[in-house]
Image (cartoon, rainbow, N blue to C red; front, side):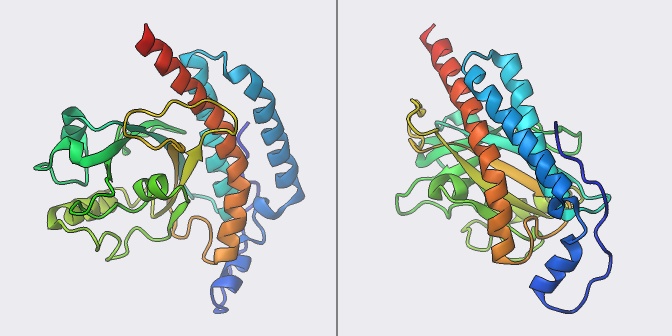
Amino acid sequence: MPIEWISAAGSAIFEWGPRAIDFVEHRGSPYTSEEFVESYAESIRDAIDLVPAVMTFGEAELRAGTEGVLSLMASVVRAYHGHKGVEVNANYMVPEPPTDELLDAAKFCRKERRSDSFACFLVLEQWAKLIDALPARLVIPVENDDAGNDALLFGAPKAYVSNKAQIINDTSQWDIAGDHESTHVRTEIAEYLKKHREHFQSFVSIPVSAPTGQTFRPRVGCSPRVMGVVNIQCSRKNILGRVAANQRKLLMVLLPLVHVLSYYLLRMNALSGETNAA
């Protein structure tokens, strides 16, 4: 069951610098309470108890279970912020080999390129909570390592390639996509972020690695290490806090849920192989 925040944080914000501001904003949030820890531990235990059965799940059960895990991730971040009116949502993306169809559907890339000039495309599969204002499906490119291609996009593509979480503290930063060679792509990114700023002003992209010792069949041209990427977005800036130490701690709290999600993606991967074989 998703954790819900219980009380608002104190409203006073002092000029103490980032660390003091983080403390004042979050000291009263349920994230710091014993009740939160107990509820979170119980939720993790329940999620782990389901793991042995996940590899027998069908598509409907997988979708329902995945929605639950994504919702729990969003609830953890919501509890951290502890403010009424904060919107937090989560989704996951999976890599697909490059095709002309995916290039046609993709955002944030030059359409005149050949589809096979990209390493793969990341495709949004599911939200914790789908709302009309957000895209039900989103396709974004992942660049090849070969020289001559465009800059690797921030967020999910960079998390996928580096196998490291990527934190975007402020989507209104003027230079957020400043290293991309295409003016058209930079403009498209800026317009997309501006359009959806009400729903997310910051986000974190976390790679989902295959569970140790489990067989994962990567798609042709896709990473053998990373099964997908989780994106968690927040309607406030600094989704995991302003201070690096706080960001690392909250990320560590989220990683067990990412690991649980890896079993759902592993089962989806197996079902995809069974379907292809059929």
